[in-house]
Amino acid sequence: MQRPSRLLELSAATALLASATFATSSLAAGKYDPGANDSEIKIGQTMSYSGPNSPFAVIGTIYDGYFRKINEEGGIRGRKINFISYDDGFNPAKTVEQTRRLIESDQVLFTVGSLGTALQLAVQKYMNGKKVPQLFINGSSSRWEDPEHFPWTMGFVTSYRSEGRVYARMLLKEKPDAKIGIIYQNDDYGRDLLRGVKEGLGERASMIVAEESFDITEPTMDTHIVKLKASGADTLFDFTPPKFAAQSIRKVAEIGWHPFHVLNTVSSSIATVLKPAGLENAEGIVSTAYLKDASDPRWDSDPGIVKFKAFVQKYAPTINLNDLIALNAYDEVQTIVHVLEQCGDDLTRENVMRQVANIKDFHPDGQLPGIDINTSPTDYAPMENLQIVKFEKDHWVPLGAVISGQSELH
Image (cartoon, rainbow, N blue to C red; front, side):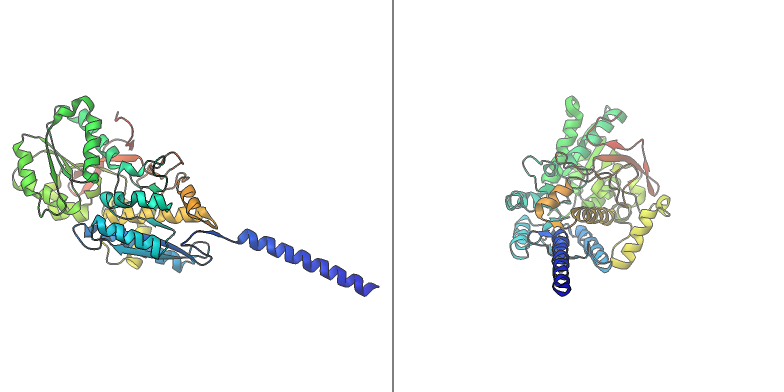
């Protein structure tokens, strides 16, 4: 009698154990879309490793190095990052081709950190149609801040349009009688900055006395700078990428022009723009900042910059430590890792988008104090604060408090 009873007890215990094991495994099982499984998260990117904007290739190098670091440390919840970054030569047609390859052939979970306003606009409708997250684009267009029409697209830094408004409002306060000459790249990047300036000036838009647009294929800025000086402008809004910004700064000095020189943030790196242009030629230039500058001695002992320098030395040793583009990419990739950690075991595209739209007070290592990453389902602008800065001798000096790119300057 006892023996059958014992067998029944064992059978019941085994069934209970099996049930508990099944429940546990069900809870631990991941939910996946293409690009993710129990051991891997596949992430895509298009980058200009060649072509006129190849200096931005450091972005891809930083992402690759950081993901290797994460993998060496065990991955994200045990899943290793498989990072695929393709060269598009800063050609929109190539961007379309490579993006389709990433989604349809490689089947990445999402793209992140891809370069170029015009380039990413070329694939925005396609990616939203496919419901694939297009995240942290390196191109600060206000088109990335439209969850109603493009719920699968998000940028990272303050939009060029907001940045343009900040410059205009700052000028109205500091130099209300200015005569403004503007040089801008003839694409959505340049036009967004120009539109922001005009919005910020409002009824005072007549302060703009000359506008010069240029194409990325032009060899120099010389002719444009000469024409802007001849217009009678005493203020230069310089909305050019790094290579051309250095040319503009040199040419302004060469022709003996001394405008109030405002330089867009993307070209404010001391190491890659101002030094090649000649620091003496950059004296007094005004810009905005949201990053610490690793070349500035005041950040030498800052824990975030110390970590960034150690990372570069180990995982991206060919990168200039003082390149702000590299530091921005480092902050981006730290943020996407934070998002993936928030995703837990739900690695569906829908959940990635849900988590990226629910970032609360995240502070990457390279951000200035007071500039955190925040998003919501109705706010697709992760970063909205900027610091006005002025270049003096060999470093940027902050002017006033951190401000919002969306609000009036006081």
